[in-house]
Amino acid sequence: MKQRVIFWIGLSLFALFVAAMSPLALLTGCSKQSDGPSATVRVLTAEEIRAPLGFAFCGDTAFAEVNSASLPAFYADFRQALFDQGVTKWDRRFDCNHFASYYVARAQTKFYLANFHSRTTAQTLALGVFWYQSARGPHAIVAAFTERGLLFIEPQTGGELQLSPAERASAWLKLF
Image (tube, rainbow, N blue to C red; front, side, top):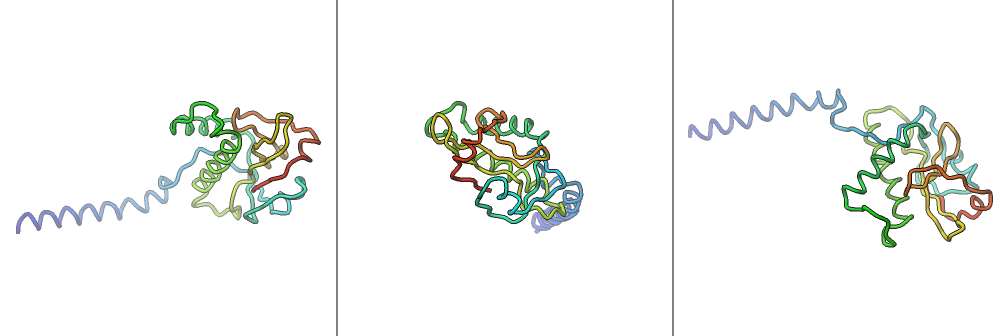
């Protein structure tokens, strides 16, 4: 009987501790953290995403403009995540389309976590997978709408790409 009472007192104290700490975690933001690409305060519409691209598949209606200064730090985090999961070199089974889609998915997850308690109207980052015909064949990269304009990122290196007008015109999938 004495052991049961001690057990219930211990369980009750633990429950009180958890209940007391939960609001603290929410107030301090401890429950959701991110080191992903940050956003500017500008929110773009799906029409603003489509306009410079000619067309694009947009799964949302409000997009947070990407702060281009945060992209190098995000790339370092992205590479570390790949290494942590055992992706240590290029392989035809994990090539450009996998790099591009994982880059976008990781960035979107980080945006969600960073804005969990935010009042932004943006549903997602203005960042998407961009398939085009490169000189070496079909290639997938990342397109980002930033305060500097539309940037193209090679997710395998983290570098910015300058696409020619012909390469931009050859794009057949733009997924945001």
